[in-house]
Length: 166
Image (cartoon, rainbow, N blue to C red; front, side, top):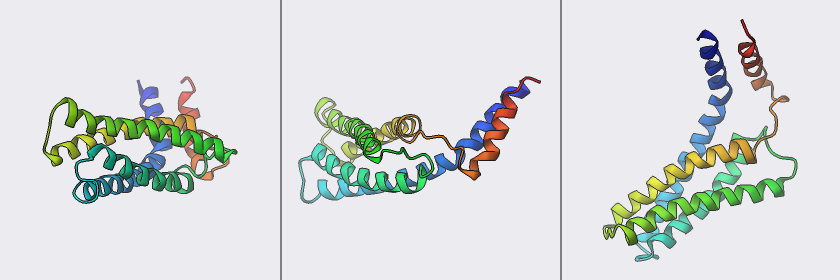
């Protein structure tokens, strides 16, 4: 049992920095997406809730690409940035589809008319899409080894030591 606790502790240490940065970037992207969507729904795109969500998500995605590439996953970037960018766009289009889908479903399937309720459903979709995005980013897009990063050397050593039978 102690070995399992050691492994879990090592895994948490390995990922906490990355998850914290991802969360910070995601928080700012959330504010960009939700804020811009809110503004558009109440001004230029009144009556086009799902389209406003697409615009908000697109702007937030561009921000997230830059921030995740240059900060969160800077040590895990792929050698071919264009392949990485294509994967990033694909994952974010899927994530955008989740958020827009929640917005669409709340308005057209569930029949809500209140803009605030529709906006909240879209935000729930963002939360679901964010969890999905993290796993795609971590294990498919930004998946280069961390061996060269000195910050992760100690975590990798602890993880490998905890995996040894006692």
